[in-house]
Length: 280
Ligand SMILES: NC(=O)c1ccc[n+]([C@@H]2O[C@H](COP(=O)([O-])OP(=O)(O)OC[C@H]3O[C@@H](n4cnc5c(N)ncnc54)[C@H](OP(=O)(O)O)[C@@H]3O)[C@@H](O)[C@H]2O)c1
Image (cartoon, rainbow, N blue to C red; front, side, top):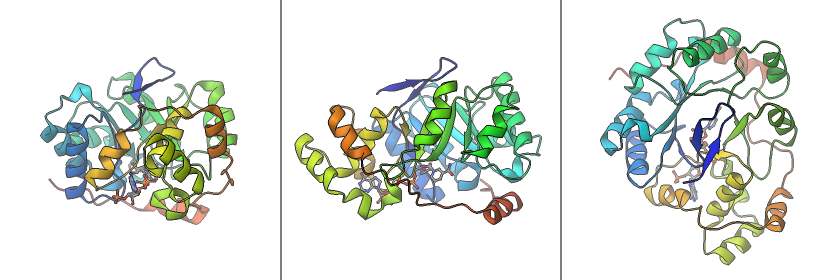
């Protein structure tokens, strides 16, 4: 495994598994299998309504808790719940998260960030992060944070490399964790000719080339999958290195275009929605 050293000295694995849109049964299965095959980073969220299943997947894998870097996110409806962190940890079946994010700049997000800072100080989070806080949101948070976050999780892939955001991040040593690293499975992205060419050269798949590009950019990457063979492929990307020219040819695909366009109306609705947490 390769590691990213965070601005507080903690090491985070460069490759992990994401669990967005995975049902509890699929999340349990994917996490258990991923950890058994050597993964050590798992990303979930209150909003994925699979935290209990992720916790079960970790326990069933047989891998000890301290060997897993567990990342989760508070949802906006939880930002003013003083028990949000403890309830999240209870669902996951653990007494600390390795990385705790606030998921969206919605509702009283400053209260959410203060909960992260408290969790960090109390030893309930080894690192803290912001998710989807690009632009004016990170600019405002910069004037208010007491602890600089270690991570931002944001959409990033070869069509959208977050060039502007990275200028801000670099000033604080904040690392980027890419979501939609494979364009949420978009056939057009994965099918770009440059990936077929490099895949042939290195004996890899186009998806593996894209994921390697992320790690060489210094991003942590958390592809989601319910397919054990994809999960295996997605970890098997650390035995080759793209050259500088090859990295540039991938970056040349950057169109500054996201897949996901969040509106202010959506942000307002995020604050109003409450996840229907798993009962057991
Ligand atoms: N913070 C946020 O707001 C936010 C938003 C979105 C996502 N996320 C996080 O980021 C993670 C990744 O995003 P994502 O899962 O939506 O998108 P993604 O990783 O870009 O793409 C997942 C899709 O790619 C397919 N896939 C995975 N590995 C593959 C491979 N080796 N070859 C071909 N296809 C492959 C998967 O299908 P199969 O199941 O068939 O493999 C799935 O359809 C999420 O799981 C979540 O943890 C965070």
